[in-house]
Length: 120
Image (cartoon, rainbow, N blue to C red):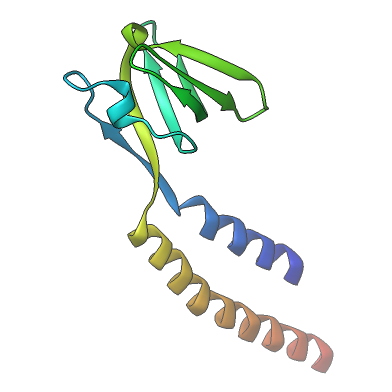
């Protein structure tokens, strides 16, 4: 039971630590906006959404690695929007503070539950 609680708290704290923010790119070149090594969410004009870590960028196309390891190249003319993955400080602080507060409360609850079960 304790392992499940710790696992759940860990997963919940990690979920909220990153976010995507839109990048305006209509007037700028891809090389000015997209950095190699960063993770981006690319939305194409046809509606498909691709999340990938960029491995190469030029003014006309961006190439990257998808989550499952395959490579993909997207042409700049096909892009509708670009979002960059960033660490959300507010969510991270809330997750850490929530973990600091919730973990001791969960431990206290478990201790009292074990003690009351042993006494009965």
